[in-house]
Length: 529
Figure 1: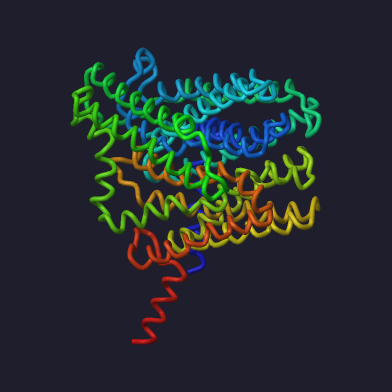
Figure 2: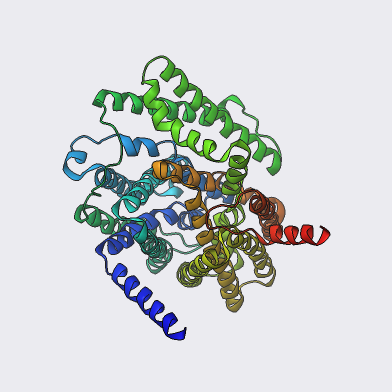
């Protein structure tokens, strides 16, 4: 028995070693690097830049809305699947052409941000916001293509190691965009109370240069040799689909930004402002959907093409699970990451307000924290494999919510380095564990026919509400103080536990066991019977 066990371990090790040396693993690690690089440039690193430039806190957290493109990428993900690019697609193929376009767009947006001084006045701040939105859009497009490329470039057996390589590269990209940019800006003279625009501009320029890793990889790798199942359509039909999409986006922008002009008096208080802005977002989405529907009915684009592009992936999901169960699953997807994403919007500013320097933040949070989160990801993967997806999902949700309370202690005690590392360890370990379990959960929901589109839908929904609420993090801190804000983020994460337990009772997903609360309820029922 012991000999058989040792042989099995050796066989798994030999197979895993062969997979790790596959050049596709290296390619996914490099593409993961280019995908992880832009995120912090429009999230925490940008918040520190704006804070040093003297931009008020509530305006700084509003900039997190630039990352909402990640939450709406499901809208144009089907277009990336179906629409060829002139010249580029013929030269590089469907996936690599879109990937190169997205990466060049990311580089242009980063350079535009580097060329803008947010302290130069309101006009410069608007330009910075525009470049940040462009960066979010192009980065989200890059994510769509990389997800599709990863799925198509190898079979099911290699998807686990390819995903691990992608995540590792993604984390390294985040380190460069977080710790690297902060170290460079500090080394070149910028600090809180001693703002130097040139230091931040040069640091962002170096980040744009680092995107060359992704561009080189795109040019060197092979196009996936698979039939993506997209029927050839005339170029004019593709153009009409793009026209409908552009008109819907224009309607969204017009309603979203015209809201302030139509309603000049903002409501008092953070809660009323949150409701007000939620209505603004929903109205803008409704306007975009209405414009797209009207244009299709008018014949601007063929109804069957629009239905196959935007409707069929959603219809198939609801047909598979039924309306009630599908709504429960989507609620879990939309709420699962709410506690850590809302806190993450303002975490860097909190560390600085407590009294830590940028080098201390870079070392503890952006370097040490990333290593801990990778370790947490491995723990989450082991839990998902050993305990089942839903059980791992439940523990990830619980730990993500409870570890937010550690920030309360740091806010009360002040800049104690040992406590900082303890908080970072707990927070990142829980976040890594929860992320791994959540990816396994999303994978169990995705259908093979619509992998790219449905994965984009799920990953977009995952961040939509948390990032919208994150835009009000500064306002909530002003109203509640840091300790009250951290307690609020903990409470926001608790309803997910009930949803996961409910799903454990209703939905035995493939490879998933029930959550702990569901198991306890089942045992109680057995005893009473």
